[in-house]
Amino acid sequence: MSARPVRRSEQVALRSRTDRRWLPGALAQLDLVLVDHAHCEKKAAANALSLLQAYPEVPGLPALMARLAREESAHLARVLQLLEARGLTLGRDPGDPYAQGLQRLVRTPAPERRLDRLLVAAIIEARSCERLALLADGLEDPALRQFYDELARSEDGHQRLFLRLAERVAPGAAQPRLDALLEAEAQLLRSLPLRPAIH
Ligand SMILES: [Fe+2]
Ligand SMILES: [Fe+2]
Image (cartoon, rainbow, N blue to C red; front, side, top):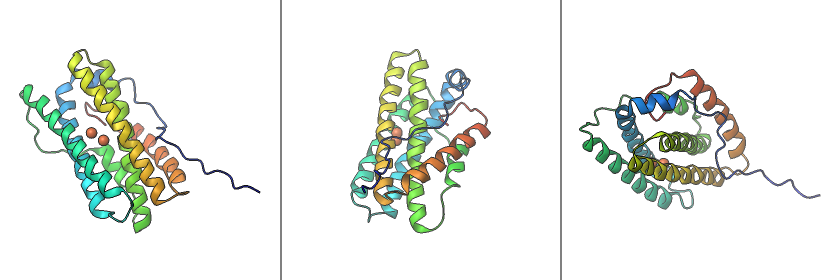
């Protein structure tokens, strides 16, 4: 008797699409979206270093997170340039209720926490990728369209990266937990008001 192959996905299949009303609201208040976007890239860079600090034992993770931190910092620098060109300042981070809601789903025991942190990162990257692609499609300015298209592709690579790491640390457990978290993410998104922000 042969063992059933383990189902492994290569990417995070989000359970819901962004509400159609999000894009017009975001385009109408693009300055607010850009400021929020800068905070998102900053948190993505910081999270990569935090994962490197927390889980150096995972094969490949330190080098991958070091590269990711550099990439997210480069995104941050480019968004900050856009802010400067528009005469905008970054200001303090007011916090992101979406990301905070997902963080609350991270379980406490160490092995579960490690898996959940990687899966939550994968989901945030996947949702960011969806939203950045919507902006790329909806914007009129060709340079901004190209910028958001490039970033959407980059975040798509990141969600795959986090999913691979999650499967590496918990083969067999990653996919069922991802399914549960994706269900929770879709519910969370429905419960939050639409904002002129990435999430
Ligand atoms: Fe990024
Ligand atoms: Fe990313």
